[in-house]
Length: 145
Image (cartoon, rainbow, N blue to C red):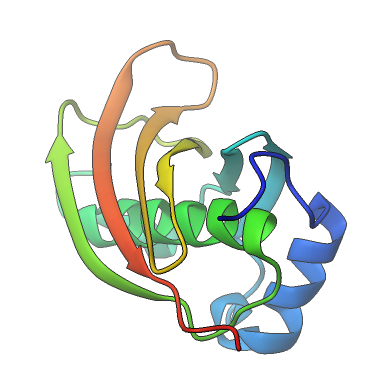
């Protein structure tokens, strides 16, 4: 079982994402690793017009990408740079309209086993205490032999 304390720093995770997934920065960087902690991570998605859908709200797919990335970062922070850890399920509850500002995703890992990791992500509009989206997800962790 992986440690409950991160083995990768925020800067190491950001460098890993830049190296392994440069496509997430096409059109300019919007995703940032703010913090990692015991069984947790916090990500930020900078507000950008490309995330807006008709009606003037941040789109569901943008929030889904942020939640998935936050879960991935929390897992990697604890197991190390395993690029092939993959999402096996995600469930989203969109609770209220996000404001047109940065979104903050707080992720906590509920289970971190050898083969599966389960976590939840709460997304907030920056500066607001209200959750705009809640997600739960499971990742498959490849055999590290």
